[in-house]
Image 1 (cartoon, rainbow, N blue to C red):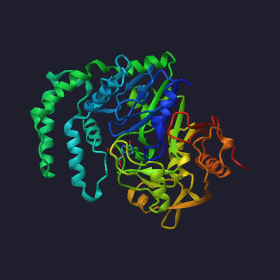
Image 2 (image 1 turned 60 degrees about the horizontal axis):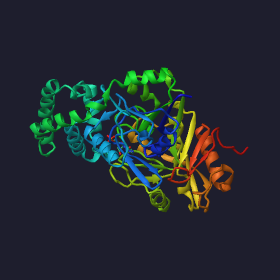
Image 3 (image 1 turned 30 degrees about the vertical axis):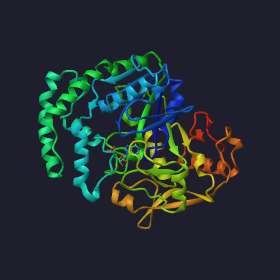
Image 4 (image 1 turned 120 degrees about the vertical axis):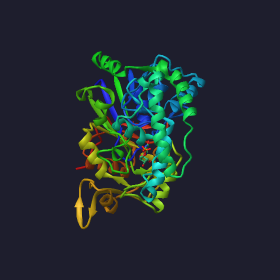
Length: 431
Ligand code: IMP
């Protein structure tokens, strides 16, 4: 299996970065194919904690090549700050970090537009991460974007930059926000362009060559399936295709290159930002999940809403994205809850739904249909074999596997590197 895609099957924050870091040790190349600095991947190695927004999670592994492919929207300021921080911690990225020459660049005005558009949306605000993601993908689709290849040719992009900024200043004024200083932004853009230059290359050729040579490639999804621009809770979504369906467009690798798809879910559900979340729990259980799971956004620091496992979303993700194995994260966080619920379907206007509805207003009105399972009190953080889990935990996990319909390959029981249970071909489901 040389090409593996890992992606989140919920509303992001499933713990993908940690899975990628585990698998990166056995990979030659780690690739980001969509999203941008809206992602926040936390990787813990021993006593060291790394929070990455732009860089692929493989950067911590000394021998891994890391690629930011064409489908990513690159914020060069965030990128270089992360490169500098890693350099200070003795992690050298020269010669093992490559940025696509076709990736679109998040300019300072995209961040300002993100802020302005959220303000203009008022009550209908999406609750974006304010990282300029939507406006940058919007410009890409409108064919007004600036790509890394443009940044390397300042003689060509400055006029476009000025024209784009003039038009955006009008919108800022409408939102009652300060206009941008065009000359200042042009100058800082020239400076950052110089800094990213050594990392820019044709990553499509690099990846095709690696694939043809049988190199082990790990494709790292950001955000999650329910935030996918096509399949998620539109318009409360991000602006990219978050799962393996985003890989061919976002990398240049052909669809058939993907050998294995690993879907990551938390043992419960969390969400940041506005929009549908039928299994949200606003009572004691939700509070306990937030506290025990340290559920605060890695990018924005916002508290995450918490609730029960939503099998409607997970099943849809599994079926549309062709998931081969599930990774269940943070099972340990459920310890101490008297009982556990699983949202197995939705109910809308007296009808049972097995798949999410198209309209956000309907999705918002859906009530979960719950199954209730006994909880357990034991601390799971020291468990390394499935058989050693308490019976109630085994039953709960087996039910998740059955209801999502995909064998479980991995269960995490703590935030540190060794704290997981490998199950490889699924867990035994009681008859
Ligand atoms: P945007 O991607 O910043 O435009 O935000 C759109 C929606 O996606 C908002 O609900 C964000 O909270 C959510 N979002 C974006 N990135 C992440 C992430 O990495 N984890 C969780 N939610 C995210």
